Length: 322
Image (cartoon, rainbow, N blue to C red; front, side, top):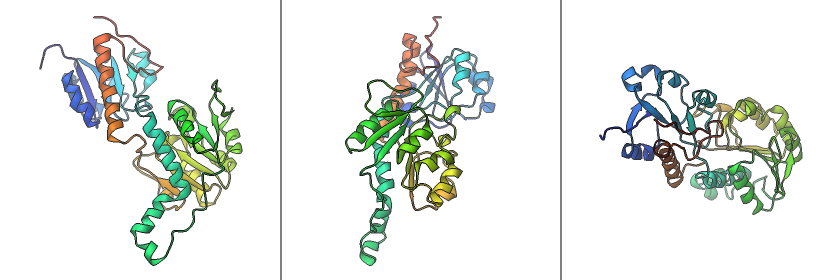
């Protein structure tokens, strides 16, 4: 190994493309995700972390030379970004490269939920088309719907553009309205839920969004309502959602994310009016490779040029010389 190569810690699981590329530029240090198992010898000289998922806050205490945390994913709620900022540690994420894939998956999940397409396929595979005849007509359709987007960042805008092609009305809720858009803005999630019959959740998992899709919002969405969650499972009160689906408070739900992944509540698994995916919004090989490239390129740029490519807003730092 050439002298002077920076040491990059990889705690726990990581995308294979990242693991393949990192040794071309750095000394790769794969370890357990448990910081209690990190010895002083391992911690010595660690300048960066490449992480997929949650990073235990204790890593900040045992890595005195830490400069950068490269997060695999556009969401970075698994990293204590406030603590990183207090240490002048830059945190990066992987925006843009997964936008289209997640937007495509969102539309597919919405259609699956409305038209019950996975159930129709299982009907065919089980031989019921032959034995029982045609699959029952889907009671719901995308025709004539009003879709409210909870969140309108890069991915939310890409979803909205796709929805325009379907001829549906589009609204959105964000803290402040965005200029230059024809979509109707609602200042609160509840007011939007009262005005639409479909909500697509695409906000990050933060304290301010925690369980904001609650029983009151679901009640406002109504008996013809559909909820699709592509953001974070913590945004939805899952117990309230199960209850609303069981009692017909809303008509159905499509979920790609859950609060305690990979565990999915039994109440959701038992319901026929839900479409469930195992967090695959960006899960194509091409998109995950692009995300992996951005993780590595952020680390390379930081140590070679002193500036990360995609730092998160909370850590807009430059590298100090020396």
